Amino acid sequence: MKPSGINKVYSIICLIVCAVWATGCSDNNAVEKKKPEAGAPVPHFQLATALQQPVEQTMKLPAQLAAYQEVSIFPKVNGYVKMVLVDIGSPVRTGQLLMVLEAPELQQASMQAKERYARAMADYTISRENYERLKQAARTPGAISPMDLATAKARTEADSALSNSEKANWQMQQTMMGYLQVTAPFSGIITQRNVHPGALVSAESKSIPMLELKEIDHLRLQVDIPEYIAAALRNNDTLSFFLSAYPGKRLTGHIARKSMNISAQYRSERVELDVYNKDNTLSPGMYADVLFKSKGNPHPLAVPRSAVVTSTERKYVIVVRNGRTQKVDVTTGNEGNNAIEILGDVQAGEQVIANANDEIKEGTAVK
Image (cartoon, rainbow, N blue to C red; front, side, top):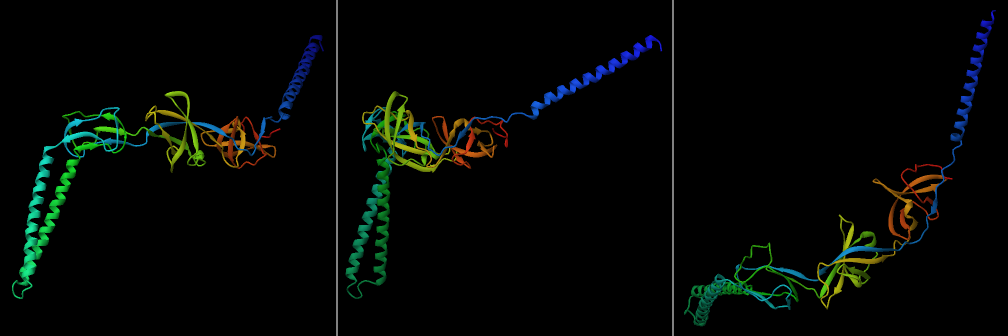
């Protein structure tokens, strides 16, 4: 063999050895890279214990002052405004005259009804007198026929019924005349005046009232309270509130009425407090913030607020059972001091993931 052929064979052998060595090195590197994946550490989560203790919560809910009584005054009869004796802001008393209307046709109808009643009453008087005389004459046998006596009696009863009917019609016309005098149904303040002397008012129109009257020395504070809190409130409980018109001024009131009805739309119950306004510093319509402490449920479990995961489909906590995660649906209650009440299939003393999120899968091993 020539020296050049030997060199070629030697070069081929060297290339084969280098390829085998490179392949072995790459395999070793692959094995070394896979070893950490096979021995990946168990995830470590911060855990918290579900404790059986109530969570007190100070809540602030929007409220509004309303008049204890209010009424929109509309005309009962058609007529013209003759006099308006009050204006916006006028204080009035029960029964006080507010307005005078005039309706000439009502006056004429009342006079006609009175005349018809007087005529019917006169006819009834004559019929009754005639019947009484016939009864006396009928005591003499054969003086008056029974038919004449019965006819006189029937005529008397008919005239009596007609007289009563005309009297009722006259009284009704008098009542309608009384509606021309508009009086206050209760004491309060005139808050709207929409008519002036000479205006034509109609009993059929109910769009704009002539006057609006509100009682303001006694107000209602109306607040809608969530159902899970309203159940624990009782009449005469004291609540504190602040008014936007008087920043920093703390006021108190007592629960006077509960609607005993849960709104299907807002899941809340309307509660009213009586607020007395003797100095007239408060007004209906004022906005208020009601503050009160909710003692929470009688036997709740408390966990950190970050332990509760809320998604579009459910609300849950992640409980660690037998070293693995398990999602448990819960409902929540009061929140305070970084704790929240939960109700669900969770036992006191169980461990939950303190910083839970949607990315933690069910059945994940926990160190």
